[in-house]
Length: 298
Ligand SMILES: C[S@@+](CC[C@H](N)C(=O)[O-])C[C@H]1O[C@@H](n2cnc3c(N)ncnc32)[C@H](O)[C@@H]1O
Image (cartoon, rainbow, N blue to C red; front, side, top):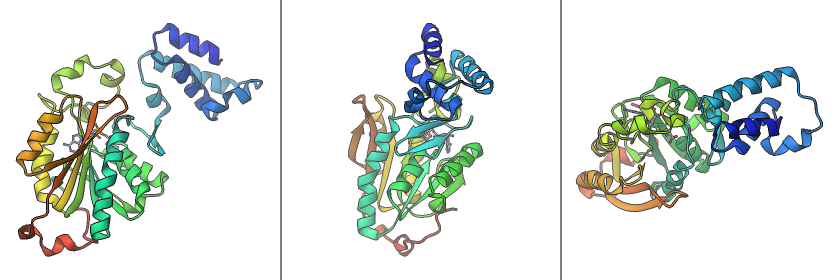
């Protein structure tokens, strides 16, 4: 079955026929992809064969394999996806890594940390960080209520739901609490480029998760303005960016007094994440921002 499926996918020009065939066959047999060889002598029941046929038809229509399976591994967990969520990408693991230094700096300084993950999607960033830091609390924001339902389910599956607060909001507009850190992988594809994306992305990722406006930078402008209202001093903003957007995004944030602290490349060597710091200013420090247990939701 594996050989036949691989040949079908290869014949149809699928990019990764070997990996996709293993993932789909393992999913219908209910085992790990690495365990298939151990089951080579077993008969496969007709229901599994029919399910595999249906999955293969979807893959041949260009649907990405993880969307067919409904889940994808990201950082240290497996994330359920839905029609309203972007498929989490390995590039975004660089963003999670870049968040670690500012989060640890905040804990060292205040003993608590409240972070907003803006455009949480599956909750991949929020849940990964909550699992890394047992005292972290996260406000997970999305404009899509369906995405928030999926993200909450992923937080429950990872055992971090008690510290995960879902908020339906247009970026940070409904978030009132003083935040230590704003993290976001926002939509950043210029609207005019969407038609030219691969069909795996264009036809299956939600456009709300992709479309960054005419120059791809709308979300960064909104976040740079809104961060001034919700971010403590000192405070931090960590962002994923598209290829080649670093200097424009730095300019947008520096206009609002946020200073570039570090960058991180993805596995392809492309600058993928930026960390900005909002410096402390004694004139602007006020009592509520010193409370570690402020209510995170608006
Ligand atoms: C590129 S996806 C990132 C998803 C997830 N954080 C990840 O990295 O896999 C962008 C997300 O932003 C959300 N979004 C788009 N516009 C928004 C807005 N105005 N306010 C809040 N969220 C928005 C989308 O629904 C989507 O979930």
